Image 1 (spheres, helix red, strand yellow):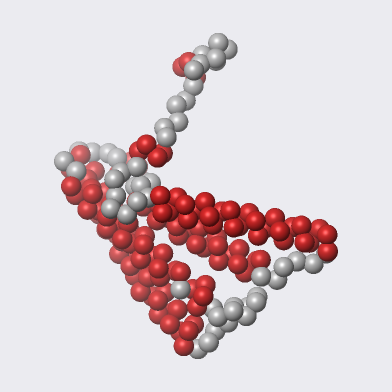
Image 2: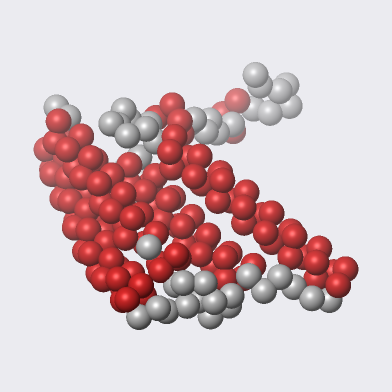
Length: 175
């Protein structure tokens, strides 16, 4: 609905991102809900810490450590959603130019490289988790086992790698 005071040629239609989602084997709602939950936890933790600091001149010791962990989780979950939706960073001049065959080949190559990168990250970070567990590393802020935090990196890196493989397969099926 246009207002009488706004010329219709100046309005920009913003497409609904959910309407553009491709059909995937694993629903994209998983990343969407994880993003909502993590953002909510970050907001609650930060708000609680601000209130405690304001009223007591103290702060919760665990909030910074846990917030950093949640931001890492948020970045990886959002990265997984971006890869699955084919919204990851790329140079559009090269990716969207040329013949459709070239575009498809570049899209598959890009998705495959993302899959390889995050598979390598998953393997190397799994070794880090093993070291954290084996040597009994504890977190600097509250002293919990470090592997409680670091175990999520290989799990989420594997998820991104699988999402990228799924994107590569879907791009190969397109006519």
